[in-house]
Amino acid sequence: MAKRKIGPNPYVYPIPIVLIGAMVDGRANYATVGECGLLGIRPPLVIASVATEHFTTPGIEAAGAFSINVPTTEMLALVDHFGSVSGRDVDKSALVESEPGTLPGVPLLIACPVNLECRVVEDLTVEGHRIFLARVVETHVDEAYVSEADGRFRIAPVQDLDPILYALDNQYYSVGKPIGTGYQEGAKLTAES
Image (cartoon, rainbow, N blue to C red; front, side):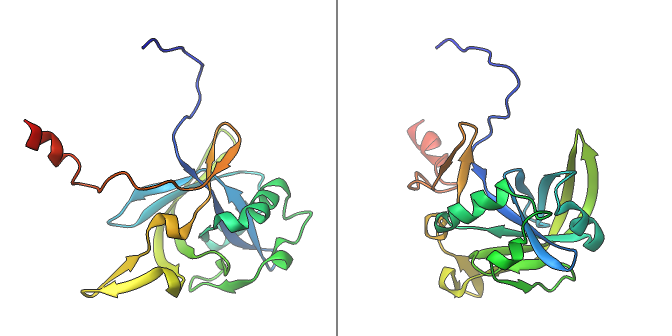
């Protein structure tokens, strides 16, 4: 099939939508961010990119830490609103319940089923974006979504967590059905040979 060049577009899917939390001017503030991802599992490293002018950015700088709060699709209107207004103009903390994390200056959004507390390891600026590489120092999961078996914690399937996904077609999506199991599907190729 022929392919058409469409210019430099970062078509990397899916894009998880998260709320980056930090204390700013003495109150919890949350920025809706799609530029967030996993860098490593051992050690647990993540990356978050926020615009330099975001109201949340100085709070991350001051604390050297931030939270990643994973909202559900039921929170879509709030998440979209938080991405459309600035904490300079709207007190976002008045619209949600927060609690302090274990790291100073890191608020956790209670309504989100998963919250990560992250300590900044590296911080750089690239073309108007502050890029924070961070180590996850604690993960909070609502009890309804976590179980323990054989001395290990197991988190509910991603469709139960119901995160918000975004695409560059300016649409929000939910998670679809599972299609396979990691590190097992490739065995089918060797079995067929």
